[in-house]
Amino acid sequence: KYLDCVSGLAVDICLETRDGLRSSALARKAAERFPAFRHLVLLLKRWLISRGLNDTFTGGVGSFLLMLLVIASLQQPPLQPPTLPGTQHNLGRCLLHFFEMFGMRLNTIAVGIRV
Image (cartoon, rainbow, N blue to C red; front, side, top):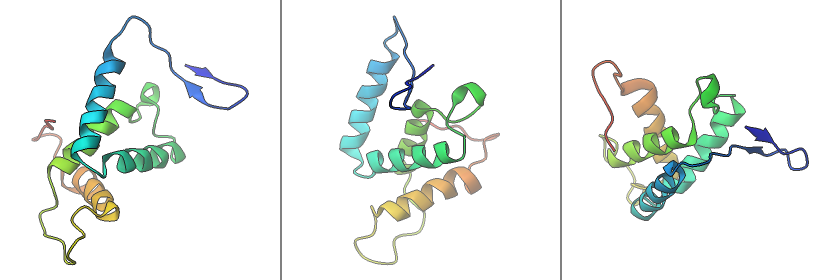
């Protein structure tokens, strides 16, 4: 980990690993398949940062895990159909579905996630 003094940006550099390339390819595929993917990831990443829950070193949710969780929530649309026509892929609806799915419904003892 490195914190740039000028910009204040946190930088994480990994050498001799190809995980970043695979992660980038996964993100590109997900963004092509799900229009809300990029927006949800950025919004949730900001939400996690504001609560200090983004650092994997301290038990938080890192970027790769967050991408997998967002993909999983977009692969499993809400059980109830939208009440208004044209709101199926509404960003607010997707965000609420994400929090409902992982904050209320998911039984982590009995269920796994497959992306």
